[in-house]
Amino acid sequence: MTDAIEPLDFEFEDPIPISPPLPKKRKKVIGLDDLLEDYKKEQKRLDERKHKQKRSRKVLEAEDDDDDDDDAEARLSECVDQCQKQINQIYGDDEMPLWGIQVFGDQQMLPQKEYPELKSSVLLLSFMKNEINSLVELNIEKGENFLEGLLMNGWLLNIVHASSRVEKSIASWVFNLMLYSSKVGLTEAACEFWCAILSVKNEADSSSIKIDWLPRYSDLKRALLAYGFLLDSPSKLSSDIDMVNADSVTSGPPQNIRSWIKFAGVCCRTRDANIILSTKEAEELLVIIISLFLDRQLLGLSMVLNEGMLSVIKFFRDEEWPDSSIEVAKSLADRLPYNINCLRVIESIVGIDGRSKQLRSAVAFQFLIKSLGKKVYDAEEVLRLLISINLKDKKCDLSRMYIYLNLAENWLLFDPMLNNKALVRELWCKCLRNCSSGITITDLRSYASIVRSKASYLLQGWASK
Image 1 (cartoon, rainbow, N blue to C red):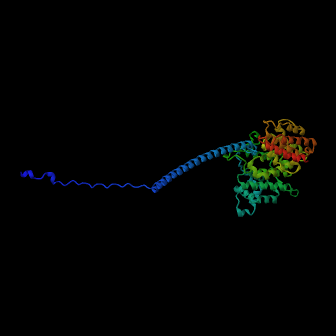
Image 2: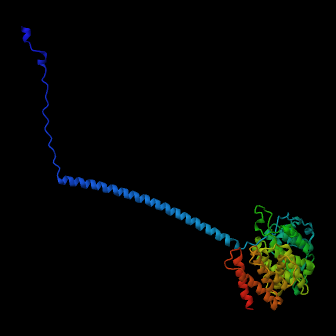
Image 3: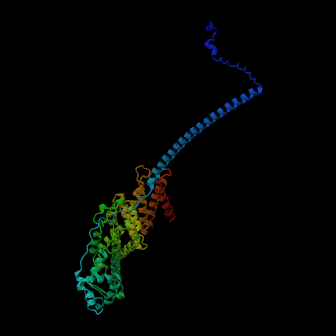
């Protein structure tokens, strides 16, 4: 029974905790102010979204506009480039090409001669026998070096003046130094020596000086050929100034050419010029000197060339000059190319004396009849040929017409017998009118504007005479 009243096991367990009941939530009362505030927030959010969308659209539109502007700019630039190319094509050919031909080719090996005869020259032997030699102790083997020193400082010329004589050995030695020496100082000193003794010999009160040896034209020509002058190869001459090989150390005029030109001019002024040159040789020499004006490498020697040319022109006697001037003109026209270079030749003959003007007129005439390709020698017939040229023909070479006008101008202007003839003047003015009015201002062919302007300018001058 006692077991029946014992407590059960679950009666000893802790009681199950019971959560207290949750309090009831009170419903929030939403008033009109709350609704208005929510509305404002939503409206603000919508406005910001619209603003962002609008700004994005503007950015996209701006990018599209930039792309359109870039495309328009590219199209405009392309159009301008095309117009510029067309303008350059129209007017680019109007620029006159540069004059210039290759006058000198490859040089030969310049001869370096020995002069054993100098050891027996009277000048050197007399100096060695002089008491002053005891001070310098001159050796006969070094006699040439000693003479070079005398030549360089001018004492050799003073000795020649004192002795009134130039020995053959001394004269030929100095001459070869002038033409072939590689030393600039010796070349110039030798040239001054020869120019001085020839000038002194040309003076009447100094005719007692005796020169035992005078060079000949063949000596000058031999030196010129050694320099590489294309005298015997006129077919090699060209208007292309780039023919000269810049990498060739032997191409082009040598430094001695300056002395060669000066000496040739002085030879024509001396009283013994007829011993050095014949009339035919003087004609050839004049052709050579005028040809040298076409070498752009000799631009620095223009004054020397001009002096030499005038000296050769004065060489001829009055009765020789009319025929010689024609021969020189024909030779130049046969030797030199017919292009802008023939105008350079005409412009190089700049003397104001009667002979220079006559030569300029003759050279222009020979180039003109050569370029026309017909054997015409009558002035009126030549002008009629120029008038007959159809300038409106699209195949007409207006660059040649420009050269025709320049040649005809110089031919008529420097021949007083022609420009005073009424019929010649009438035909020439008609030719100029054809060029000035026959070529319209809208003619876009190459040289059209140049020919028209040149003819108009000339017509004003000739019509007023």
